[in-house]
Length: 221
Ligand code: DX5
Ligand code: ZN
Image (cartoon, rainbow, N blue to C red):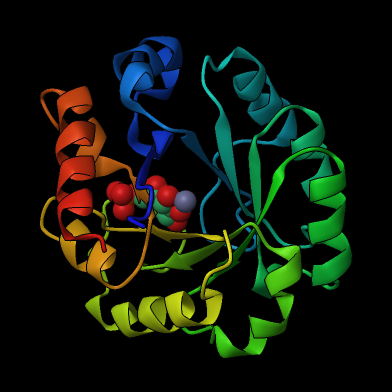
């Protein structure tokens, strides 16, 4: 059976002063909105505190996929589920208790995601499969939009797909996804694609999302 392909546009590079308008340009063709939360500790950049992020989640007309790039994520992660995020991803490098935090996210009603920076091995987390609804494999160093896709991570994407096997776990790639790179990421086994600058720098963001999705579907098995 063909994998279902999802595009989750990141609003990191959207016009944050006019977010309602930015989201309305892409809402009809987006599967989820990817919300990058950065604390200037886990990554050298700051985006939103919890208060601002939860306001965005409440106002967003489509489901939100929160990507928490914050240190000591265990306490705050379930709160993102409680304010209505449909998916909440924590970083393996930022948690002290993966299992209980992933369980708390699910208990609060969201899908539980586990993110890995480029240097973090997937094999170390293969025993988390029962607690995870999505793996997020970073294809850039987290912190900024507009970086170059790291092709050397495609091997890790393939290994993650093999580890997932038949389980209904989503496999997301994030960073540098564009018309140039999405085909190879899809061939490697990814099925959820974050795209920030590719979408918001396009003249027509909605048609860019459709093109990205079509390209990913055309090579998915
Ligand atoms: C980077 C963020 C990404 C970023 C993607 O740390 O996690 O979601 O916004 O932006 P592009 O698609 O421009 O690489
Ligand atoms: Zn992200």
